[in-house]
Amino acid sequence: MSNANIALVQSLYAAFGKGDIATLINGLTADVDWKVNGRRKDYPMFGAWKGPADVQTFFQGVGENESFSAFSPNEFHAAGDLVFAFGRYAGTVKKTGRPFDCEWVHVFTVKNGKVARFREFTDTAQFAEAYRG
Image (cartoon, rainbow, N blue to C red; front, side, top):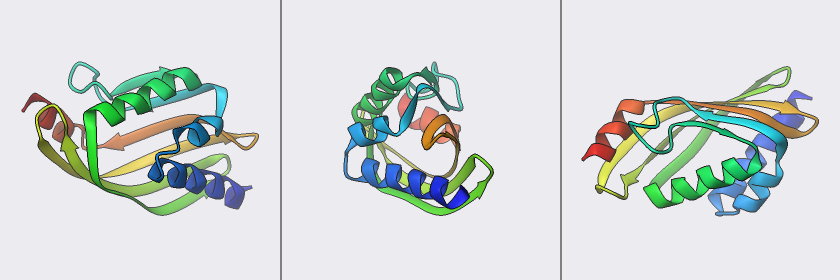
């Protein structure tokens, strides 16, 4: 199952890379638990979202707040129903034009061929500083 779970996660990154958020949303369970670590008061895309509609709102916010110059999921590992993706992104916060450039780890929990849980760990200080200007 680990290879199938990695393939699922890679397909969701490919959809994101093409701007195909509908395909990404279709890869989530009805009760998906989506969280980007950090305090929402520091940056609007930090925090938790519950369910596909909330995750759709999250991705709208990403589009409104961030402009990417790089988004590279580089490494994938699986253990049971967990998929760990390691990567890097760079870009600017649209509100201020200030840059961010950092590595990240995404942890997906896959249930019955769909993502049931997502956690992002990144350099939250860079986003907060770029957002404050």
